[in-house]
Image 1 (tube, rainbow, N blue to C red):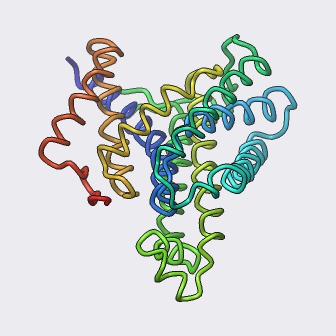
Image 2: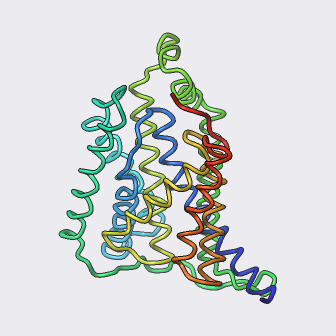
Image 3: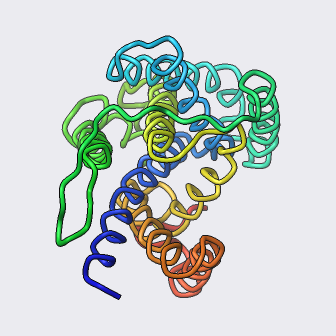
Length: 289
């Protein structure tokens, strides 16, 4: 194996890891604040990809405007889902959220097949050209996608650590009752968390659709990856979601190149099983009662 091949796999792993991290961070943000697991997170990812596709490729709006509009649309979709479906489930056993999420999975994926068709689509490239790093080719498009993902992750960190809204969200995640007594509007924080989590999934779907392809059934694999990463990193941990995203991203990149995507898929679950034996709460998580 040459150094060029290693560098190429590493670049791909970093790009995938950042996008996977966006999906998983959105999921863990929703769980951390609301204690509700959104099993239809992958379908939101799929809708975000199609929203960007139609705004940019079909209606020919500028790419950056299309990305912003698709994110805003899915943000408010997430707020609507939280208000209508998940808010009544707050404080109830997770079996209820599982039932609602499964219904959403079938409704959105089946509706996507009807509305978008089963033909594979792709979001056109915006930037052409490439550079070489240690002999490996890195397209400007991948560089921009990685930059967008990293900027969003850093922006979310700043939001959670340095703003009143972020500190309030962390307080609700830590102790809802105490935060309510301190004057924090828990319900508003739930809306923001669900909307932000959905928006991150939407952006991840759009970015992945630029690299690969989009199809109404793409949400299933995104959900599987997101849960793999969240379980690996630890439920409720944003740092764990990012680290888990890189681990799965590198596994996918290296094993898909050297062997097959099926082996990469299996290896991801093996890593999770081994990790849970020695650290059931995940790399950065804590035990939830």
